[in-house]
Length: 220
Image (cartoon, rainbow, N blue to C red; front, top):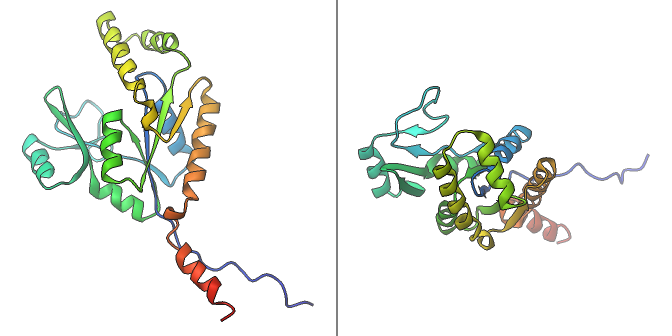
């Protein structure tokens, strides 16, 4: 029997995770896409934000949000413990660095469901780790119809959301990828293709340098 069979692959080590940032106008489907992606990929986790607002019924600290008071949040701002933060209606919201950095080092990908301003801050803080994806609706009329079908908002609130949607869409060129969510299964497939391709990028595979060095030394 020949002894020239290929050797078993060497241990190639792990990879560095990425920060998968999804933005879209309200009602375009980014939250549903994020949840389905996480459901299909156990090594993808959702970023948990910190907030100073009070927990709503059923919300769990550390799972839905990290709930802190204003003094603690401002201490964390001063200590540079957030990737991004903002104040909305007198309440703070922000992305703590520590749990995200731990996940990336462990090779897990972290999904962010945030607006264009948060996406900008993340890209400035961690340019090598961030992948930005913008989700577009097939039409603004369909987006408005989706908001109305929810039956949760008044006419004034819907009009305000549509105005903010136009502002959000105007930032689409700042993103690495754009998905038009006309068909949910097709949009999810595109999102998963992006995930697979980005995982293969050189900077997310730190073991490659040692592997190549070993290849170059085989005949020496």
